[in-house]
Length: 314
Image 1: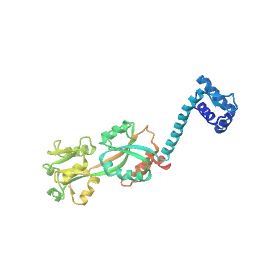
Image 2: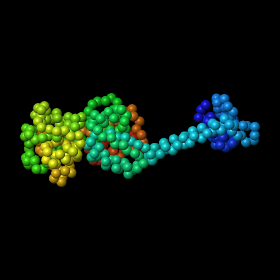
Image 3: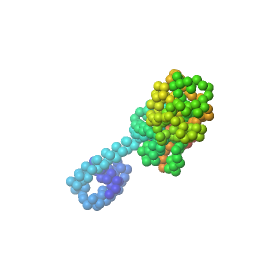
Image 4: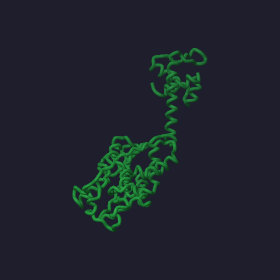
């Protein structure tokens, strides 16, 4: 039994004629008869009563018709669904991201994408770089935005943004009035770390260890949420190191001020990752097209360059 045999049966059953069915299927009448005979032989049942001028279904034929009606209804539904997927009238993409890209860049990108493709569902999952990498490797997300924490032969990574890190404090902290501050002058000021596992934390930690030893800073706390870190500093508790994009507004309105720490010139690179073997959906390709057009990302041109063959056909 094969699909062509069921198709021939379905058309004969609904037209009541081998000749009409052959016409609809663009086949000869003998070819349709052969398909039906082969199907009857396979099932071990007579499907049509051929003793009259107009063929009619036997009881076994009626049973099979109830199944082929369901089968071809599903077939039409599959065609419709995938037609909508290709025309971006339906679909879903899942994205993993670290806090900075997910909070300060992706809302703009997702907003633009939604304007162009309002029927596509987007699921955004947040975590540190290690979590995002694992989500990609495990196939839980289509694309991931994170720092480059390790080499993985199954992943492709594209540099999309470089963000400067700033040392900031509340504006009423006397240290902000100085043109230059040495690392030793920060010793008695509480330091607020991001949670363990974030790549910015590891980068800053190495910088402090190199210049002031492993136990520096002496007094510190750890917070998981970047907005909570900012709020703590705004309220006058300690200092922190944070991506510039996250504090640009607070510095502009006078809630925070940059601390000019000697020798501190760090930035952090953010990458777009995806599985090399993964076949990107039409919806994901369209997301990459929108992503490449957002010029707030310092290296958006890398997206255009890497995905040029895909972007050309959108």
